[in-house]
Image (tube, rainbow, N blue to C red):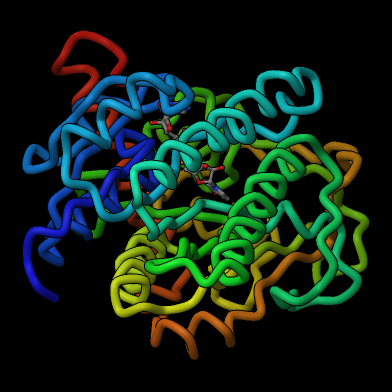
Length: 346
Ligand SMILES: NC(=O)c1ccc[n+]([C@@H]2O[C@H](COP(=O)([O-])OP(=O)(O)OC[C@H]3O[C@@H](n4cnc5c(N)ncnc54)[C@H](O)[C@@H]3O)[C@@H](O)[C@H]2O)c1
């Protein structure tokens, strides 16, 4: 790629955004990070990136930012991500994931930025009819989180379609990446997930292994799966970050608008995951069996044929031990750093 393409990364102080920022910088992109630090951390942003503390829904601020910086693409991670919270407080999710995204997309569009990458989610599928799930399968999200993301996908789709119809020069194009379960940490041990009150299974299990939680609950042990617990498709955050760089290169190469699943196409049960965390951490934290949670599909796995074909992306870290080991090592580092700093870094 040629140098000095400036990319706006929203939510770049968060888990996936901070890893992707590093990958973008390594690939030669200039990065401007915008984050309101709601759940992200200033220290997680690579020093080579420019950091601006702002809310993506702040239209005046974002308009000005597009004027001040020579931005030619947006990678939009900023959002709220806790499914149960979205059920109890839908306004919060529609405001941040739909409305703030609308403002950002409108601002980018008016500034003439025609490349957009969006963090979507497997939650848009709801309870799939069959697995692995294809991008062309029905979307029928079963919670406000999934719906708030799908609305943003629809806006992107309609915008790209309108520009095609109107034969606009430099038409708006996007890549919506539907992530499955993101996990793991940078393999050099220097970055990982520090989301406060995270609900992700591997993160929670690593916290238990570090003595920060008394126990980890399995929600449902009577599913029609190999060991009765739910099966999910875990993707290493480094592979996901690489997918964003590939998606950006694709848009700079005039690739068309596309929706892509991000997963490995195979799943692990909750029990397998917990056993693996216990094994890599050499810990025997307590595991309790709870009732099923409403709306949890028994099995969720990505058909990742399309991302491999369209982006030429191939997993490099498709190994549950590598995922859990990197997550656990990071969790230990985070605790040591917090101790040294005399405060909780999360
Ligand atoms: N972690 C997963 O497994 C997963 C799965 C599917 C989709 N996603 C999506 O990926 C994206 C990133 O998730 P993450 O796990 O890195 O979460 P995260 O909470 O670590 O990161 C989100 C970042 O966005 C920032 N932010 C939130 N609202 C903002 C706003 N209005 N303006 C500016 N900054 C704002 C937060 O401060 C944080 O730094 C989210 O959009 C999420 O929905 C994540």
